[in-house]
Length: 137
Image 1 (cartoon, helix red, strand yellow):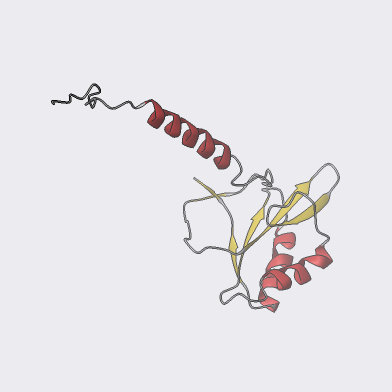
Image 2: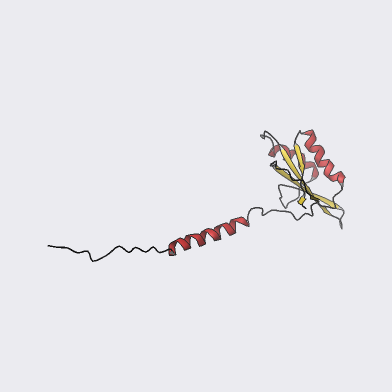
């Protein structure tokens, strides 16, 4: 009694499911890439050709509103401003357990040096390293 197979293995391969997976991954990466820095402040940074590879742990941004003659301070790109007298305790709390505490300071082009130096003095008092954030030229 000779039994024959009625179904044969098809040698071709369908890539339809693979394209679905690639499409879903593409959508996932497009959505997550827009969420990388959602709380960024719009600052006009000074230009520089020198770039440092040290990775700061905390960022402090100083924004200037010339029409009001007012400066606001923001920690880690948060859109809610922090009063100046609360910057030092906030930095101490964030950098408490850090081996190499590093701060990056972003300032508008119109911010006076006095405002930047006040933040630098906080870093010096607490023995933090400080970097000045600039835009690449």
